[in-house]
Amino acid sequence: MKPFSLALALALTTLASLPAAASVITLQTRQSTAAAAPAGTPAQMGSYYQNLVEGLLLQAPSAGYCDTMPAAYLALENSSNCAGSNTDIAFKFTVDFGISAAQAGSISFQVGPDFGKGGAVFLNGALLAASKDDLWWGGNYGASTEILSLHNIAIGAGNHRLAIYGLEACCDGLQSAQYRLGGTKTWAPLSTTDELKAVPEPLTAALVLAGLLGMVVAGRKRGR
Image 1 (tube, rainbow, N blue to C red):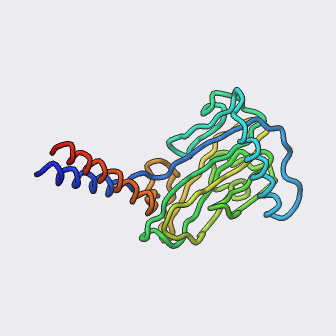
Image 2: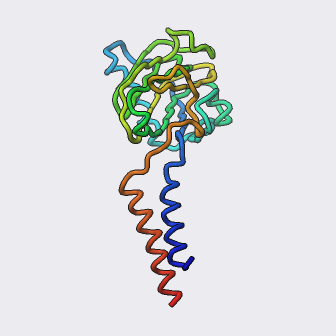
Image 3: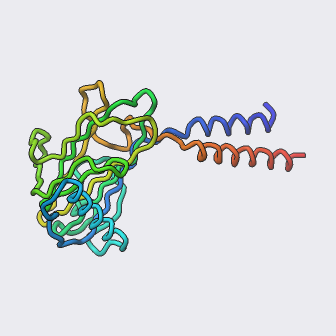
């Protein structure tokens, strides 16, 4: 095969491999002694947690808190993942994931929190649930009043973001989350090996291909 043809084949193969990544999980924590949300509507409580934590995230984490990217949303806590404090914690969990055309329809989530001062869940910026109660699931998804359970949410093909905010005074228990696609009965943890593959944006794919082809053309000119 000629160098140009070989390089072009490599470029196309690279482009075809772009949707390989699954969910990307981010855990961010900051010190906070803020109170639970005031009594109000779910929208008011959701805004309270979102605005409070996002404001704290404008500053770098102090000692005992961190920004990290775990492999799974499974048994997470500040004290072990950030080698730090087990008190006065503001949490943000972010899960970036993709839905293929074949998976589009509905999705369900179950979030097992340790939010002693309540928390909220958003999907693509829209509030799904909020509670100012002391939420501690104790590792039991059957504890219906202690988990944030979100069933049969309509979802289309493309990339999506799940964001969970919460406050904990003491004592930083293990937190997990799982998902289930519509039409199935199997729950699975959100992780970097799940089936929620990221979908390359058209512009990103075009730029990657253009860059690869540019390298091909440049190499061809040098080979003259």
